[in-house]
Image (tube, rainbow, N blue to C red):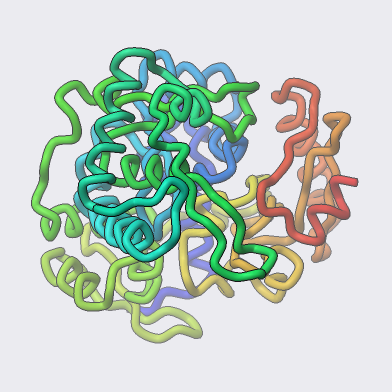
Length: 399
C-alpha cells in the first residue's frame, strides 16, 4: 500500500492537531490530548501548556494546571532519549518499563563511575556505599520536609552538596554538585517526580515530590519487553505510518529492541513517498477524508510532540530545517498550514505575537495564522514566553 505525503499530512491533522473540531469528546480534554499524542515534551515547561492550547479551543492554562496538580492525572517523567515528558498517570508503568528504566541504568552506571574516578569535595572512597547513603538522605528529606526544591533538598540532605571538581582548564569543566545528577537518576528510576513549578506556570523550576504522591505504592513493575510492545503500539497509533528508524529514534531503543517490538504487533508494510518501506498498525485508518486539511492552521510551541515525532521530517518540514532547529536538533515554535510547517512564531516580552511565514499561504492563510496567533497569546497571562533552546529565528522574532 502506497501512502503519499498528502495522505500522511491529512492523518497528522486529523489525529494530532484538530482534536477539538468535533466538540466535546475524550480527546478534547487536557488528558485526552496527552493520551492522543502518547506524551508531551516537557523539557521546556511552557510547551506543555501551549501544546494543549494549540489543539483544543476552549481550554485554558488553568485546565492544564488542574490536570497536573489537582487531579494529578498527568506526570512528568524522564523517559525516551533521556528527555523529560508529561504522560498520563495510567501510562507511567508502560513508559517507565519501556524507556525510563534503561535510562536509569545508564545514569546510575555513569554516576557510579564518576564518583569512583573523579576528584570530589569531600573525597568519596566507596562510590556504591556513598550513593546509597545519598539516596537515603533524599528520601528522608522528602518524607519529612517535602515537597522541596533542589536547593532546599541540598539544605536538608547535606550529602548533595558533595562536588565534582574540575580536571581540566576548559571553560565547561567547572565545579558541580551531586544534586542535579542524583535527582535526575532518581527521577528516571521512578522514585521522585517533578511537581509544581516554583514560579508562574511557565517556570522551568519545580518542587520535587515522592512518586507516591502520584502513584500510591510506587510505579508498578512491568516486563520491559512487553512494555516496549505496548509503547510501540501507542506510538504507531498516533504517529504511523512511519519508518522503523522513526520509531527507533523516538523511543531511543536499539534496532533489535525496535524490531522485536514491531514483530509482536499486527502491522502491515507500506510504501512512503521518498522514504521507501514503512509500517502501520493493521487496525489504523489510513484513508483520511479528502480535503480534510484545507484551511487548517496551528501554532505549535518549541519541542512540540508533533514537530519532534519523527526522525524523517521532510514530508511536513520541507526545506525549512535550518531556520527552525538549533544545532542540537531542538525545533522552535512553528506555524502549520494544512498539515505542514510554513513558518515560525514567538511571543514577545509584552505578550504580543510575532510571526514569520517562510512560504506563501495566500491571503486567507495569512488571516488564519494571524487570528490563531491572537487566540493563543490571548490565553496567556500577558507576558512573554521564553524558549529554553532558542533558534536564531526565534531570537529575532522575540526581540
